[in-house]
Image: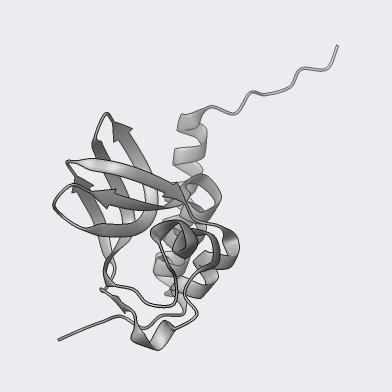
Length: 133
């Protein structure tokens, strides 16, 4: 009988770390992290009670506590009637949107809405330049 090896989460983490180190030495580290997160984590829009709206990769959720990776704060959006439309279609007025720089990690304490972002909307939102002072 042929035996198959079961891949554990630790095996995946070990290979991911090894690949990240190899990519870092080649100068491809940031690209690798973003690609691995696209494969493993869901891209979402989170509306909080008092901290505003964020888009990013959903890393963890515990009740109203939500951790996002590679997150951006949505200060202002145009070209979508609601967050639902923004998450489904993106913005038809990208130059009018104000979406902050990316932070590697953020813990949001009072999430009241989490919306999955479609592939079309993600591509659209990624094309919006970082809003800076």
